[in-house]
Length: 570
Image (cartoon, rainbow, N blue to C red; front, side):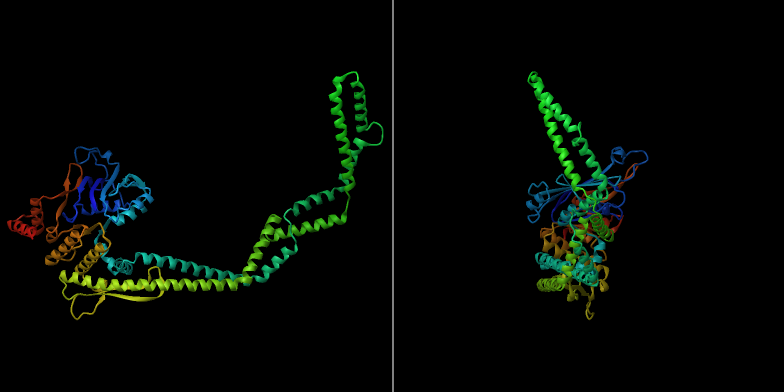
């Protein structure tokens, strides 16, 4: 339940602090006093997105309405609430999984908004995103506004209500998992059939391409080797001439060639070594050079002998390169490696074509099994909903009779759909009749505004008890009712409060205001430069006056005061 609420610099609120109580509380105030502003602030606290400008515009004089506060301090809107968690929500593992601090019982949520539209949210002083704020907020407070009455005509709301009473959350989760697998398998089968159909239409062309690449007997390094050989064969004579000339310079038969002169130099140095030992190292180095150069000359000669101008081989190399270049151009690739990869891909496609019937048959068997699993779980959901249907019909009728509808009939029409969906195979429609001899019809089509309000209150009371909702706020749930019916609605909310749910009702009816254990009043106060919204918890004497005003209007009469006292006594 919510223990305290702090709102600072939000719309018409400069600063507001409220301590909340357990049980049933009421909020009253003139139309336009700011009750919806407080609800809007709580909505932001629960993860709703900011609409419009949260901060009021600065006053012309630059002063706030209270204590001469400078409007420049209104640079940030802060909304903060402290919640006392029930045993069901005080789950330490949940907070640890979300990396949130937890003291075992309390949770503090804060939302900060700036005039520039920036927003930050915190849970127990840890920054969080809005999705987590919504996840936790949805388990803490349910705000019922008038527009939610329209949900009674929505099939999803009706089915969700039935599921809450059926306590089938685990079974529904299991069903969703099976249904998701069914959809995935069905999509996979459809795509496989489409690919198979497309591949069959192109099979002849694919086989031609694959055979052409296979016949080419591709090797990954082949192109580089052939291009090098082509370069050599195209310049064979030039290469051979150059090699012979180099060899001749080193090792020609005539006197005075390079190797002969070096050999003579080595011999001269060896003679010198006998009388001048310092030349021994240089002699060895020159001798090593002679040996190395002699080896080089021999290798040059061998290479020169190997190089032959072979027009026939050059033609073969050119033809092979033309084949490789042609294949690359045809398939829009740049290398033999890419051609080899394409060949493997074509072979895989052809293998799929050859095995497509077996693959499709296997997927069809898997799809049939997946659908059967979905149908089995859907039947289980239907059985649980059928049981909840009877409870819902009986409970709503008994509550509506207590709310002044003695001839009411309420039925839950549960029918089967042709195909499974995300929530099973059940279609739900609430049927309603408030009068004798009038057949039941869809609730949203036949019920008046007051009847809709009573049905929704009854549903909310039933749901709150089923899920142990900590806090529920009713925003003018009493629309369209008055007198004794309003009193019965108040008693129902009072009963919800006694069963452990914190109930807050925003109301304009004195019959409901008088039943609250605690009474808050929202009012506006005109300041020097701004109009501000305030809220205060009323004392017993202040309650009498407030309810008397609700009975008689602006003029406070003795009769109204006495009626107010009588309502409070009841």
